[in-house]
Image 1 (spheres, rainbow, N blue to C red):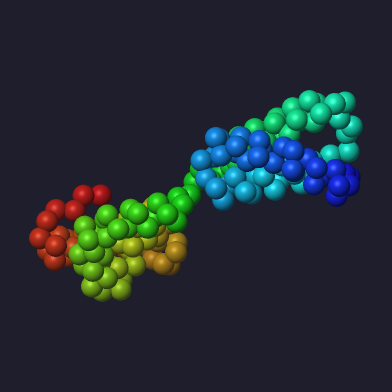
Image 2 (image 1 turned 120 degrees about the vertical axis):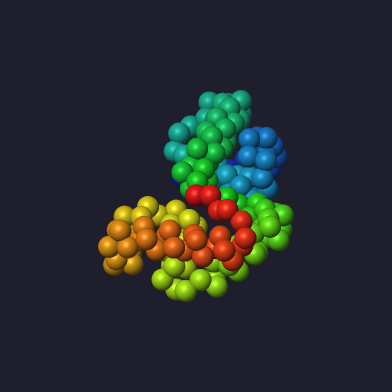
Length: 160
């Protein structure tokens, strides 16, 4: 484990470089700060000996690049949307979909639940049947009837 003095020296000497590398790869300040901390934590825990300042710098560059790549490949990151994107999209689409949501919410519970789970949460009909403890054919029937009720209340055709 490296001393506090070595760590502070490395951060002072290479911190800006590590931040720039992270910003180039991640294009996000908060992710850059996370990776920056992770890189210097690895530095503190690294027990190897650096042959020269160039070797230390090269090691920090390699660790920074690898950490950024790992972060970009992270399952959670690739399968989620940032809250900023959700807010931005909601602002654009909110008015477009408000009447659809209101129509869904006005349905009787047995239709609303099936419509919500199938179309919004994207569960299959078999999964919806298991969740609601209903027969699969009943779920299909409720979906069809719920869609018809929505068509009537919205006055337009709703596609799956």
